[in-house]
Length: 102
Picture 1 (cartoon, rainbow, N blue to C red):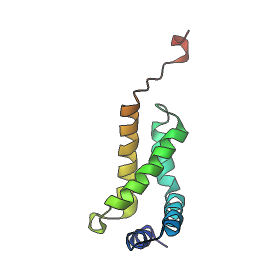
Picture 2: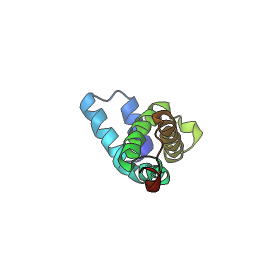
Picture 3: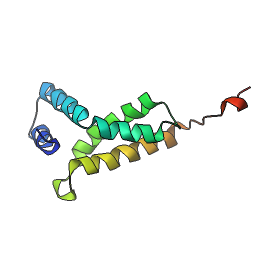
């Protein structure tokens, strides 16, 4: 099942159980996109935190996606990366080099 088909099923009124199943399918199918965005920014925050934020961004992308705007993968990649950047900005986390911590 393609990403677009899953989104159509979610929007057609999926039950809570079906919604969880479809979201899990989307995360599994788009793991590479989420991981790629997290890898690009892992110098600035923990990889696991960025991956989690990417999953949240993917769910947000499902609700905002318009089929006329292109493929879901392209739209989701942009949303995930921007969400991760927003997370970094809001976290206020500044990483210091090891030699500066003592």
